[in-house]
Image (cartoon, rainbow, N blue to C red; front, top):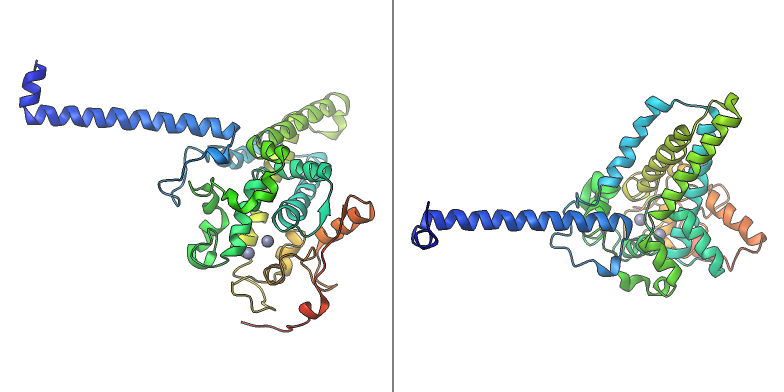
Amino acid sequence: MPTEATMRRDPIAGESKDRMDQIATSEREGTVRWLKALTRWIAADHADLPQPARPEAIDWARIVPFILMHVACLGVLWVGVSAVAVGVAAALYLVRMFAITGFYHRYFSHRSFKTSRAAQFIFGVIGASSVQRGPIWWAAHHRHHHAYADLPEDPHSPVHKGFLVSHMGWFLTQGGFRPDLRRVGDLSLFPELRWLDRFDIAVPIVLATGLFLVGDWLAAHRPALGTSGWQLVVWGFFISTVVLYHATYTINSLCHVFGQRRYPTPDHSRNNFWLALVTLGEGWHNNHHYYPTSVRQGFYWWEVDLTYYGLKLLSWLGIVWDLKPIPSTVRDAHQGECR
Ligand SMILES: [Zn+2]
Ligand SMILES: [Zn+2]
């Protein structure tokens, strides 16, 4: 048994002790990192996040819930399907896509119309139920995208980073978790929005719980519908959210690659009819990069933009106002296809 004195003299024993210390330290650091990640699943305090050591490295400790969202869709093998469950999934897809495109994007990120503080918060909460984090996080990254669209600094440019990173890799990284809060000073002024950003995960938990309770009640009182608590959770929450995820992501990944370019913007943005249908109007992405503050992204009547029609309806009801148009001279300045 070597004494401390002999260890100090014996270079091999000393080296192995150093190695053991290193392993113990890295294990301790790993545990701390996982514990911090666990707390950030529940309380995502962006202001508290340190500058990441490797911004482009996948943050495995934090993306477990994202992976589980996908795995949970397999629950359909156990819970089966019913017309009610599919209807709930479709309705929740449409409502939440509208909250993402109309509010997270056109309102919080681009300020293309005005609304009351109450409506701002309510649509922020509906947007948060999409499990795409809070409006401050979303808007900060999106404003960054417009500032550097398709330049090397753009975190989700398919031109520089390829399909997978532009589709979903970018927000699973250490850098992706940390928004540049300097870009969203106007939104950070509202304590309720800061709260929503911090506890964004509370909203989907409430939604999933509500779906379970409704499905469970229907199973007991309306058995002919053939649904259940878990069936509504799997369809209304997991499947609907995962489809909503990937539809939203196509604007970053596919809409900078496939489609037409009417306007010679400095980026690679495209107009894509099919993606505009799936995303309720966001597919008119070349239009949008050309004039980002326009509330409508389908600039002409034949460019279907369901989000714009929804916002127009809300303006007739007095819920939103001052919808910013695109001046027709600016809109008509370019026609046909450009490079
Ligand atoms: Zn873009
Ligand atoms: Zn935008």
